[in-house]
Image 1 (tube, rainbow, N blue to C red):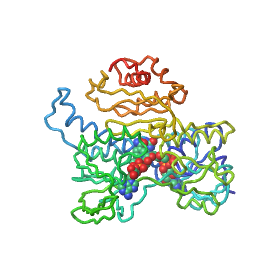
Image 2: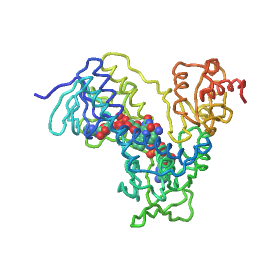
Image 3: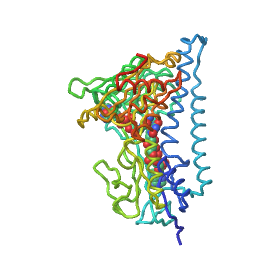
Image 4: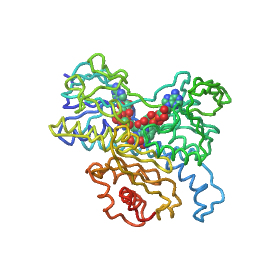
Length: 463
Ligand code: FAD
Ligand code: NAI
């Protein structure tokens, strides 16, 4: 007879593994199916963690090579040991994936190694072995969107996976797609010495980011040396011994041009991954973008089958999947799991960083909501001056009538850490006045947040 579980989760990314831990904590007999040799999914193996490791290392290199001299620290010759940097990244990845293995053992989650296929409601096949489950949670994540005419070989034409593994700094890296992956990994290789050109279809970068931030962000990246070809599309690529020749055309028409690159990174978005899962067999419905359709409680149209993370609608972010993982586990255990989709922060880990939570100004305008804006630049923040990192500003958006915080956007040093306070404020339904009246330690970057909150009521003190 096949082994039976209360819940089997397919996929061990941040959605799946967190769901498994929480379900086991709540006393459910839990298994997680993962086909990769290590746990942690895209995020830990080929996404968030390795990219942040390389962003951190390349930032240290950039500081040693350039920025430290502004602090009176002169280093004669700074050399890059890329093999060591890559090995250090791999150590970080391994520590994290092993960490999840440890947490599975600690919480008595069974790792079913192999590829999971749903054969019927409550029935899963893992590489030829059948299991039964009262509930199935699909957390199979996403994969890179391919670009017709530009065939990925993960050597000369790479996705983010190949871009994290380069063993040589490219002379010229062309990034197709001016989104989060392109800007983060473009920054890594630019800091290490590559010339970086970003080819973006739209006439702006970072779609979805508050437009004012995106415009300033692009300006800062240009100052760092990144080149942008906006309103352009790549229609073909030829690889050869001397690199890649890309055909680039203006979106609005005009002559095509050839752009030569040593490495091309295709980063035009990600799409849900459900290959081989057996969704057709059991009749799980997808939406128009091939995402698994779920209701407000992550239930698919098939009783007993749920889905979370990148494979359903919403921002493709690790922490969004984690929140959903916890919430569905709690619901399966009879509790009232819930996710507040209005308070999910997003961070671009470049330098400066860009962090946002809640509505953008563009969204408020489109929705006809009356709002007040409070802004404060890092040039007027003492700590930012001491750090030598004065690029950027904090921008808060509050309801014109009630003063309730609706959106918070930060372009600047450590924006990713600073956004936590504002996420909490939005979660608690705080007003700009609440943030403005909260004492912030001096001298810290967080004082810029307080000043922006004061600025909502036109009473900032230090500008
Ligand atoms: P995934 O992490 O994609 O995990 C799905 C897992 O399911 C995989 O391990 C896969 O092998 C497994 N699987 C699939 N099908 C089967 C099957 N049939 N049987 C068994 N196993 C299966 N997000 C952030 O929030 N912050 C960041 O800084 C960030 N950086 C990123 C950088 C890069 C380069 C990339 C590519 C992504 C980044 N993301 C980041 C996005 C983040 O990685 C995803 O949102 C997150 O991993 C989604 O989690 P998930 O659990 O839905 O799926
Ligand atoms: P993205 O959606 O962020 O950006 C893709 C960009 O490519 C868009 O600007 C789009 O206009 C452009 N584009 C689309 N087709 C194009 C074409 N044919 N030619 C030129 N440009 C084209 O997607 P990206 O960067 O691939 O990242 C995927 C997802 O991974 C992100 O949306 C995010 O959810 C997640 N991620 C999150 C990170 C973080 O939180 N720091 C880091 C990296 C990834």
